[in-house]
Image (cartoon, rainbow, N blue to C red; front, side, top):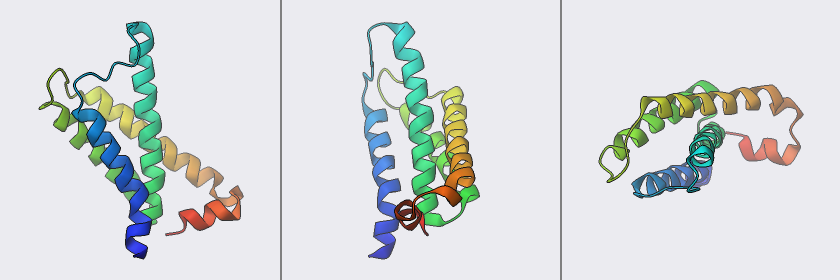
Length: 123
């Protein structure tokens, strides 16, 4: 039960990412000048969150970044088989940057986090 509790947030994010990358039309705004940067920012942020949730499950920042990066690679590969979608290495790089940023922020601010968050993150 503890194993499920630790992994649930990461698996929920992965399930959401899989679902969203299975959709053919993920347009946020009809204006491409808004849609493109918004989607890239969301990529960055969601993979930062994935990395933090993977840290909760694994207890290792390095492993969390690696797993988040591998999931980003898998997600882009999966999009190759989705109509009207394409897999891009630039998105994998953005995903990896987001994961690395999430790990860096966690490493930097973990000592100052409130006890309730430290307990939630404790592997």
